[in-house]
Amino acid sequence: MSLFEGIFDPEREAALVTGAGNGIGRAIAQALVGEGVRTVFADVNADTATAAVKSSPRPELGFPWIGDLANSAARDALLAETEATVGRVTHFVHSASPPRREADHAMAVGAETWAQMHAVNLEAGFHLTRALSRKLIAAKEPGSFLLLTSLHAGTPRNLPHYSTAKAGLAMLVKELAKTLGRYNIRVNALVPGAIAAGGFVADPKLAKHIPLGRLGEAKDLAPMALAVLSNRISAYVTGASIVVDGGLSLTNWFEPPELGEL
Ligand SMILES: NC(=O)c1ccc[n+]([C@@H]2O[C@H](COP(=O)([O-])OP(=O)(O)OC[C@H]3O[C@@H](n4cnc5c(N)ncnc54)[C@H](O)[C@@H]3O)[C@@H](O)[C@H]2O)c1
Image 1 (tube, helix red, strand yellow):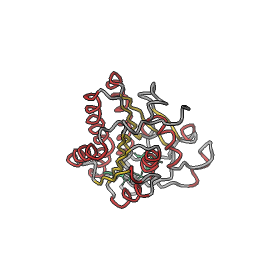
Image 2 (cartoon, helix red, strand yellow):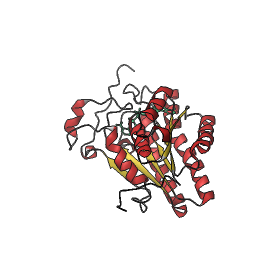
Image 3 (cartoon, protein in one colour):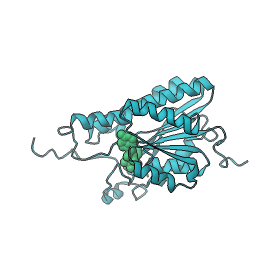
Image 4 (tube, rainbow, N blue to C red):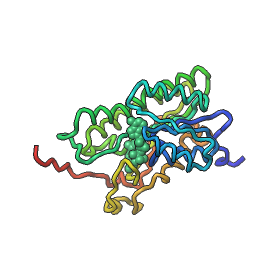
């Protein structure tokens, strides 16, 4: 068999993708389904999650789940319903994140917006990953988890609730990779650049700062995501941050925020 054929084992493997209603999460979930992997498409938006399944290459392998991942009861329900629907999750992708709004700079962001950003990114990322890893450890099965972080896990974005949540996720990837490696559970970060999707209102002028000369698209992320998720291709990759940014990080900077009247 060639290396890139059958990169998953659909008999044994199943996936859960959060934020699968839109953007990068949708592109990855649809690509997994395209590889024959039974996949739960989790999102807070019922319309987009359902539409994402329907427009998948193999809709019969996609299962929408609707709920707010900031809520711990909803996370528990997601885990129970996912197991009932697709069985044990071997591949987990955490892409859900509230949208970023430029107005939410350090002097303006409200407590609720701060809490929601951290709850969806970091708390959901931690609790879901740990719960899924416990099932894999009990079953002595390998697994592969991919958490969406950001270039702004390491450089400020003028959105402190977002950059601190992503910095936390970036460290969570390292903590979990170190702890779970002995069980053959791999944990990696996927780091997008400027991707024209729902979570980022892309200014086309940004393209001139990107060495490859264009903004990214969600579909630019999916092949790399699948490669890192695949235990055949990336069996020896864990704790890594895989940057897919057209070279943006070579030039990445943001002017300090406009504060307006304080
Ligand atoms: N687009 C970019 O340029 C970019 C850059 C760096 C990092 N990222 C990260 O990649 C991931 C995907 O980004 P995107 O641009 O595709 O985002 P997106 O906004 O297009 O998709 C995010 C999805 O998460 C869902 N979501 C939001 N809150 C939720 C909640 N409480 N519970 C369940 N689902 C919820 C949304 O409904 C949406 O479908 C995010 O984690 C984002 O921070 C994106």
